[in-house]
Image (cartoon, rainbow, N blue to C red; front, side, top):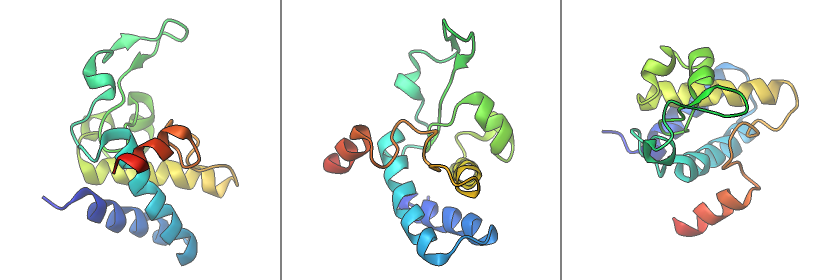
Length: 134
C-alpha cells in the first residue's frame, strides 16, 4: 500500500547506506532508481515483460526463458541470484527493490555503470522517453 516512489526511496537508500555508499551518491541513485522502475514497469509490482507475451519463451540464441517481472523487471536467473527469496518473490516490491539495489551495488563496487543491466538505464532514450511521459 506504500506508493512505489516512497518504497523505492526507503529500501534503495537503506541498502546503499548499509553498503557504505556516500549520501550524495545515494541521493542520485535513488532518483535514478525511481526513474528506472517507472521506465521498466510504470511502478506496477505485477508487471511482466511484454505483458507476459513472451513469458517462459526460450530465447532462440541462448535457450534461456525470458521472464522479466516486477518493479525493476528483473529476469528469472538474476532474481534467483540477487533477490531475497529468488524469482518466487519477484512481484514483492520490497524484495524486487532490494534485488535491484544489490545488482546496482555489484556494478558500483566494480566501478562500472551500475544501471547497465537495465534497458531503461539513465542516459538511454527509453529512460528519457519515460521521463517525458511522467
